[in-house]
Image 1 (cartoon, rainbow, N blue to C red):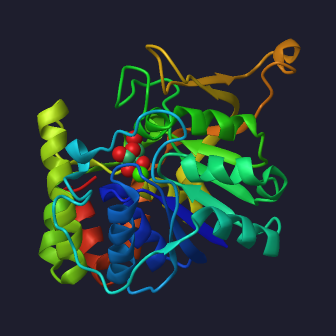
Image 2 (image 1 turned 90 degrees about the horizontal axis):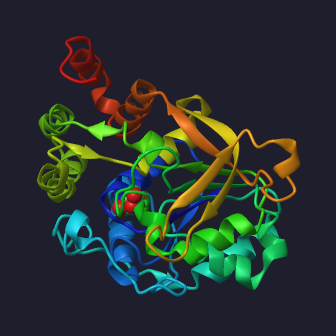
Length: 322
Ligand code: BDR
Ligand code: CA
């Protein structure tokens, strides 16, 4: 069973839709302040559930990082976190994300996987409250960090770790079993291109319109910021990995996170650690460094738009996409 911990967020919303339209056993969403503050993020999470036609519980968690001043990413995701669409939704999120996480693990030891696609504040708070229970997670899969590639908040820092570096550091220091991290090293390859976006628009229908609309601000940001045509959709890559492990290749590493100074938010990642250093730097995670982008997009489009599989394959064959 899977809990998606999110901060929707444009790419989080796509990840939620992908997960809920797949066969994954997603039991709930927990939300923290990240791309947008937690109340609006929860509305956006509920909207994604509605678009996937799945009614699952949504719990609100952390309103701000552990210590650092909170910085949202309205500049990247729009004033509501979803390109300014300000969707209305049919229900309200509940409070109590941290307790929900801990109670669910207690009731189902070694069966719960958290896929964390926002700042790690909720996960860190759960660790602070009950480390022993968190050690009974089946898996923790994290979107964050940048091992050998430049960051998106500074030359060295990726947003999820940068916005709450203390939470990220605490999570890795907890030495939880089965932690896998997919950061910018692999997500930078996941470009939702203008042709893909146009293909989705041509599919037509409510869900296609939603995907097209919520990515507008993201596309404009990518052009303004780095002259990228299209947008990088980070978070759905982790969901695709849950669906098919061959999408990503992960390597044992030791991860620590810088919490102050010029490198704040940097993920410091060591691979192939010599035995003599292992007592100091034990392997505490696996970091994804290789990605099968074609497999990702096959999963993404064929799961979200199953009625358009033939169209997708034709567009691929004709070289319009991929
Ligand atoms: C991460 O930060 C957020 O902007 C995205 O939702 C993603 O989780 C990428 O750095
Ligand atoms: Ca996110």
